[in-house]
Length: 92
Image (cartoon, rainbow, N blue to C red; front, side):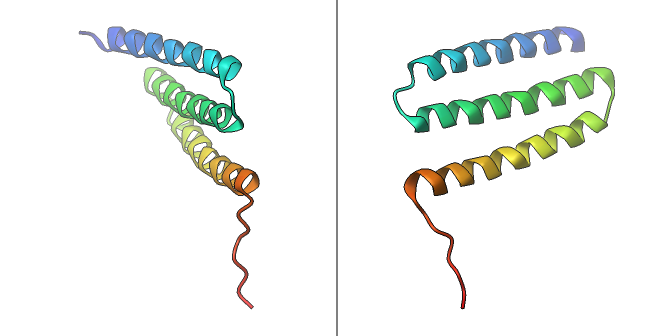
């Protein structure tokens, strides 16, 4: 299997993942379902950037993917703190 064929198969899998996520956004009954879908989109975008960076031999896209991954983690933490009312500890 050539590298191009592998990239094509991986791209198709990522597109299917996004379609499933879109269905989940519409049918998701809670905010947590929608946040998990946003996390799925973030993870998928990281995978797409890494795949595109490898295909075009552009290392800067790997850096952008790393920033997206870090932002997705911070967004997840912020969501949990907002929904469940978790206050950060203060040290006096």
